[in-house]
Length: 378
Image 1 (cartoon, rainbow, N blue to C red):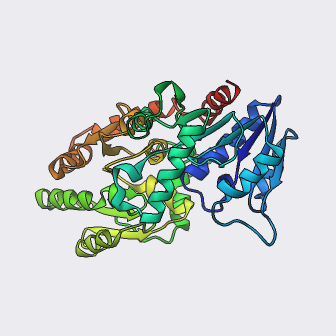
Image 2 (cartoon, helix red, strand yellow; image 1 turned 45 degrees about the horizontal axis):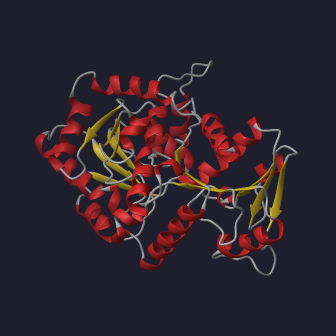
């Protein structure tokens, strides 16, 4: 069987959740499947890791040269390829499907945030996501959802039959050295090595928010709750450290950070190495989001040995299980109480860290790839 994969997302230099998912799936499929042939469709020249894939993985660059199709590459250029040389199966690791596609086409839907929070998206972007998701869900053979929450949203908002949606959870690759208890054979704490090379000026104690600055992440609610926490516990030394790119409609969020700069430290976007330092030094990780399709940062925090505070909404309880301190993101008092429980109640943080380590064992990219391949074979 020939399986085609739209792989341009996996070829992105700066990867977010969807791009990382696409790369990990390809890498794991290369490990477990030596029987089928794969064609990886790219718009641009491949990164080096593509060239290390086994012989049953071929790379096909479409649109490279004078016409690079920076927009609508999937719908137009990949459609033409499907018309003239379609594989047996096409897999797109996002909610986008070429207008022309094989009967056995599969997609992954990560979330439908534009439906629940339309005002947090630019109008044209929202229309594009609305059309591509509707089209992909309507004409794909099967839809892969990354959580039961996303599956329910697809049934509710797009009328997708339940039997057409398969839930395949994301995997995770433990980083190992980032956990609090890890020590190298030499006895040197690897966290200290990272901290020595980091140029960030960090408070001695802090709660970490690490995500794109956009309204549905509820940073403004967290800042209000943290202010309330500091007023109730004026001798507590913690500050709130915020790291993440500025997203759409972030003006009021940035203004709120500026108004509270006595207790909030904003770092903007950080490198992967600095990200590891932040996790390693944080007393707690808190993102009281209004909506998440999955929430990969929960697993990152588990891996780093940081207690997690998050919302009891959408997919987050699926991911975190019993290993997080939950709050109602719409209730400032609830967020503030969650901060108190983790930062001030004796033993609570330590219990959450251990439960997070145990929970992390349930997630692997190999399992994700095996379940995805099972769908592609169906």
